Length: 291
Image (cartoon, rainbow, N blue to C red; front, side, top):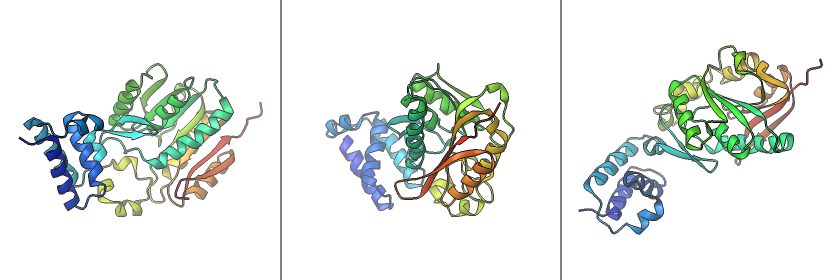
């Protein structure tokens, strides 16, 4: 009977042979998931014999990874901004790029609202990573998380429940390309990581993204800007006068998005770079309406 250590070493060997980067760490994560053990418990139990069912489960998970399926979908969860979130093929895998949006927005909101209550709208919420991270940082914030995908709404609800935020965050279906339903009320903050990959770029994506992650959460049309236009034309009316708005943007899109925002009446526009020096977030404030 194989030990947990044997299962790990075999998984690592096969994954390295398949050319998978970080095979050491990924093999450990897969075996820990198959055994339902935390990493420190796995290390303690490496010399123990593993039940055949766990060995078989780990084998299937390793095969899926070698075939190209992203690790996050196999594990069924992923870490984002210090939070572990449920993940499925219905949603994008949260990425470090999106943490830049949370970081920058958190700094702005801290200076704007302090400890006071505010209400935000997360459009195209996917797993709910942005909204849940903001609600975690701001205990008095309340929000609506919206996505067109029923599967994404279900995952977001699971994550909201996971962090006991059902009394503050509401997950609802809605299409960014439609006109906003004003019945959901007004918001102090609007944040979004919309689909922004161009049609041409979709063809060049890594197979692990192109073949496994949801196209509807990736493709932003011919120039990648369809959803920015739709939000600024159809949803900006839900943002209160003087309200804060922030977008994640794709490579070389920041100036175009900033122009669209300016044309829509957004001022004090800022472009924020990620850790690689790539413009990743564009934010601003809705012009104060004179009564």
